Length: 174
Image 1 (cartoon, rainbow, N blue to C red):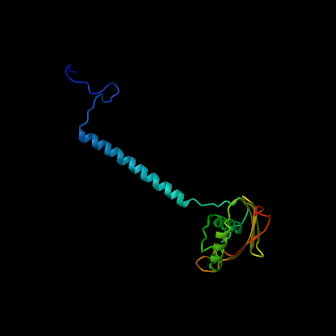
Image 2 (image 1 turned 30 degrees about the vertical axis):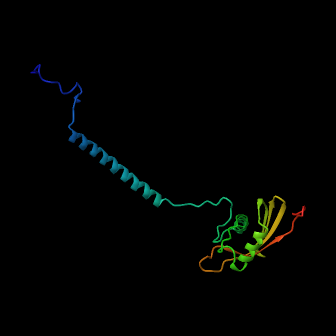
């Protein structure tokens, strides 16, 4: 029944022991495997994107404040003081009527502070009082603001006046 010259093509479990592929067959098998992986990846991507699009988005407010259309006035005052320090006067934030006078005043007496010591806001009077510490002592600034009334910037404040208040004697040596 079995001949001695016949090469055994499988082991006892029926799995081929040695099957060599031609170059064309190897490429076809690899291409088929890659197409299957690509299809799995695309289906997975579509499912993931659909899940992200359909998942409701929640916004958690930790500080308990209600979100308004305008930025917090404290942040605005901090940004104005930072712009004084960096000498970057943005015309959107600073009223053009005071921009040149403010630039000249800050060129004569630049603001070089280490940190903001205090920031107090009076929303009724529309002013911020900011105290900063520089190398010679404390400097206090009173910043008057208003909500920008132009239609292209309805969500920001505009600096309308800035003055410095004497807190401690800064120039003791002079």
